[in-house]
Length: 177
Image (cartoon, rainbow, N blue to C red; front, side):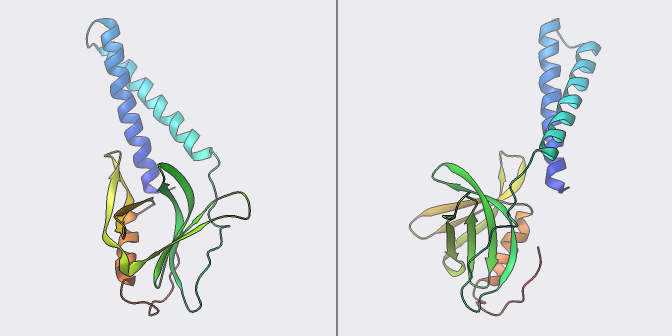
């Protein structure tokens, strides 16, 4: 279980506890021990059920997605990711190679698209918080004035690996993610 999973469950539980306490206190005409206990119990139960649903809901598997590498190109870091494309979030496999950042879209069929971003053309690479809570996205500016956005686990490691590979095309040793 990833650390970001537990952070998500915690923040959801915290939010639901605050909301339920507020709702119950407004319903009862003010804050009381009853409204606090009701809010805490309801929020804790909501967080627990949310965590169980998220944990046991089937998640797409990026491990079966195959990347197309150029001759002599090595994959340095790979992992599951979501990419914001045309105001839609698509799942897939993200990889840092010795010269590019690759994203293979998960599609059920033979027409799965692979996007390629030259590492040396990427600018302002950064880890960003999503929804002001979790730092789980990487953003970078690419030519033509576009900002590319990916949701990943441990975005600081992704940013570090991208920075390590910039300008070192073909000289990296593959690592396992």
